[in-house]
Length: 432
Image (cartoon, rainbow, N blue to C red; front, side, top):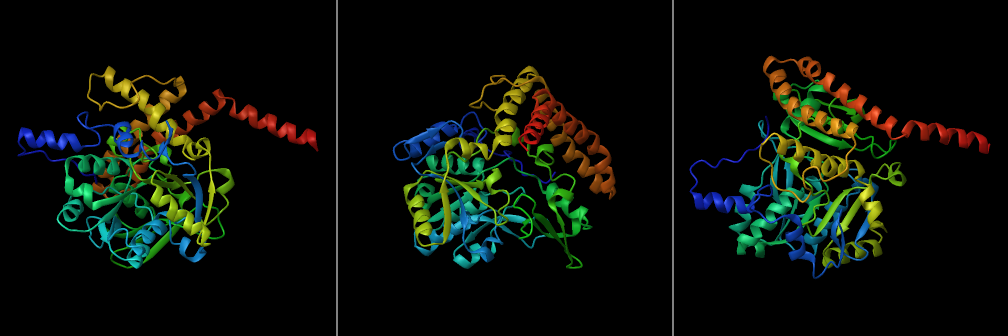
């Protein structure tokens, strides 16, 4: 299925207990509230339930000024800029992040970058399943001071490991979180490549977010390269079936039980500022939640030097950049946990209790359809690859996604979206 799974065979009861204490989805591990409070309560004085802790003036939107450089970033380029600044200032010796590989079996993996140039070459988003056990072993066995980049559950795992391991507490100086909707299996990249005419076993490279100056930031392109021919093909993201994140294709099952969107345990979190005022900025715009005073000072120095464009945001605006994510991950989590509870199955204990949020009937149906789509996509794609037919995947999944889209439309009707739209048009006509 293109995902990593834990292998506990051969472990003693004591070893299993230690593993459970550092698993981000284990009931034996401390949750994000406990970890973040221990890390930030004395320094990042402000707190918002949606965002976690943050510094005064630590909620920002912005990008790097250099258009040539920002074109090679996923969003506003602030993540790579800050990591480069940490290296250039000697605050860390290396950065732990994800890079493309030349392996036929794995397109991306965690790596160690020790130079500003290497970071620039290895930037951008990676919607692909990775793991960090080997790279953390390398960090523990070296004398490097590192910054580590990861999605919320990865950063939480690092914090849990630091609680258990004094060496990692010393080695990992900064944690940089990435705002996350959900993680993908390798099937996501393979499906996109297949739609560009590249068979899954021939996919060599994929760029999930290619910017074009003539289009707005949320209409990026996707580019894939054939391993045998070396040819690369590109299409606009909206032309791909399966690139709608609301359909939850290839989502990892663990993501159904995650309630951390803003990487609450990270020193700083970066995401996309999906707000109307930034949608026409082709360069992309980052949203930033900063909890570390050193990192905020570095960003402000970049602003003063003219390298960055930054502006302050309110907590409500920061949260609004992820409106759909909160509905899926918080309201949806309440529904999914209640469903699991009724089925007498196991699910991790979360900060949001089963059935605790008021979710209308139409959205509950939508949540359940997404789970069906998520689980079905893995099985359907495995069979499509086995028989060599992408049409099989379409035939299985399109009835599900049509039901999802109809449910969306029903929800808009129930909540008066279409009526508000008509009334808005009438009001504009009357003003003429």
